[in-house]
Length: 312
Image (cartoon, rainbow, N blue to C red; front, side):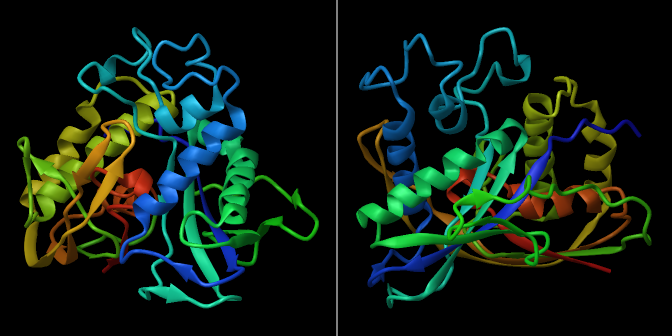
């Protein structure tokens, strides 16, 4: 079976210490992504144009590359039907589940850098520090340290010395291993996917596999140096269709966010829950392991579609 050229991915965990009471909504994905986008633009924009469209620096500006991620005509034919490329990062907000966090509490912000997004780690640090110092997005906090989400013992950045110790460790595809006959998924953040063009509130395993492989295909073509040919997904999709969804339990999670681009509130309803499937899943398992870090569905830059995986 042909395999795609997977992009480099570096899963990181930002430890954020609150400097006063921190208040956030039930799901803070839009809060952190919105603050990150605003301070990123303030940090690097040299033209001060009100919008990025039409800017001569659109294809070289760090903010544009990371946050707007334009579709460059003729470069990524795989994106001819998409207005924007997938962002080279995933940002999962703290999932503490409380309305008010006291001072001195450590929040966990998980950030997966993808492809060339890894090169912009210093920008992520400066922007998130500026966001925390402002106190305008939930409250004041400071970046205490950054560790690898793959190995919490590896400190990538320490605020005391204000330096990056080493390049962030990258996730690698595991080779070999025992056959996988069962996969279990537990969604930690709202999942929002479309099946045949429609929002799917009760996806089965085949629908999840299709959404995941579509996302990995796009990331591979754009950030992994791959091609637009998606034929590598066909045998995997057949395996997913043959698998049996033995358990699926989802509940609606209602929330919205303010869109700066559209100037209005946008509904971002998704589902939370779990699913288990059985079948010949050995070939699919590595991609679901990658999906633990790159998420599934829409809103991934806000942390949507994050899950934990179990295999038997």
